[in-house]
Image 1: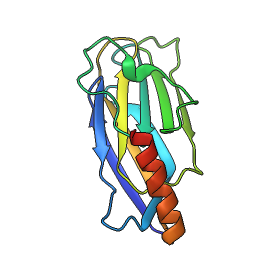
Image 2: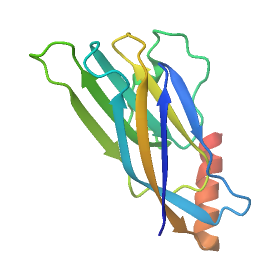
Image 3: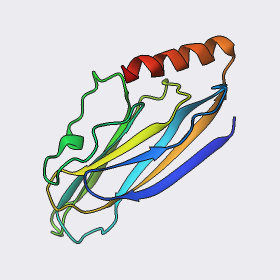
Length: 152
């Protein structure tokens, strides 16, 4: 199936919407790649937490609250998460960790959140690849009902 790609840059404590919904819901998606990188490597100590959700998260988060920085694998609306660290010191190496729940198929919009948990409020770049999956009527109904249930 075809691959759709999305990329963007997010400010600290921000949320982006990836618009995927269709009128009939017959196209599903699965995340196959999710990568993040700081917008300014080597310029500050930072730790970005970037997550992808099936449902919109709380909006208007005050700076420094780190609400988007908490990771909870028990949350069934979480589709993927990534953490990247970077340091100004030549003696400390940064690292990246990416986890994708790749068996999750969805047919509605998804939401990307970002927090710099160190508090430097620096932006981050993200790249997402989604595999398109053709859904039959039963799969379409199941995916849509799961999304509706997650909204309540």
